[in-house]
Image 1 (cartoon, rainbow, N blue to C red):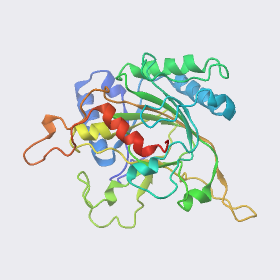
Image 2 (image 1 turned 30 degrees about the vertical axis):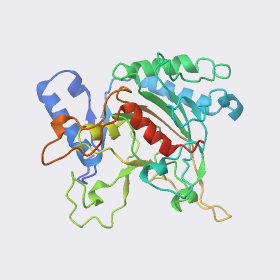
Image 3 (image 1 turned 90 degrees about the vertical axis):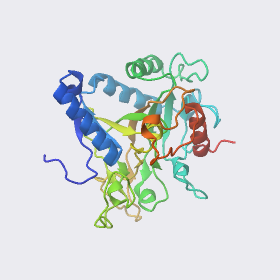
Image 4 (image 1 turned 120 degrees about the horizontal axis):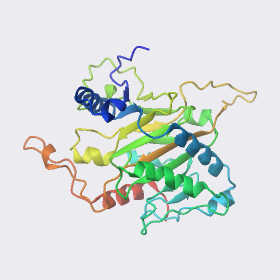
Length: 331
């Protein structure tokens, strides 16, 4: 298939070109990676090193956990606090990503539930587990975390997400979203999704003032968001997050994304005139974050007389707390 010529096309790069230390391939891989990050905030990766069977097993465990009764999941419920990292199960309605983009005064809860896992050695914020209702879940998920943790600071988080069935009409009418438009808080986020679809990214080609794309006025009829379709073969989706944008002083802007109606969904209408239900959707993301005490203001190399620092000094933990307090409605 010929790659799209659209400026927001997200390429699929082969990590094996980088892993085998071929200088020519490494340089080409790095150039394509940075180009895609600048244009779209995203890239897709194959041959990333995480075994296919481990990803498949993770999705199987996710389905088992989210099929538990609310009473069983309550054993692992995250304590209602806006001042701590998410650890354990968060029920539908706990998280409202819509508030991150400034929306106030409207119902913006995400139509999803999720389970968050921290470093197994994190004694400050330990993960809550449903051990009595799902034996084997904790050891497997911790083993998966460890595979990715090789590259991650101790503040990083693994998220397992389930999007339950929802009437398509609620999404098309703007009354609900599986996730509202938002950016992630950390450095980068590797994501795996199932085949249902619905992930969309901001169409930067439509933004007249976006620093990395030239808008020529011909994009007015294009949508604000464009789909990132699922691909076979355990493709990893990687997106730029807030801390990397801050460190690079905006050179690599965080990728705004959401989860809405899949582009391939057939909106059948039943006898009562209502659109059909979207099927269950599952995904898993690993939020790579800077160490909690690390400064997340722009690095000196990205600050000049002409380009002043766009972001004030603060630690990674302070930034996480600031964003979390915006997103959660706990008292």
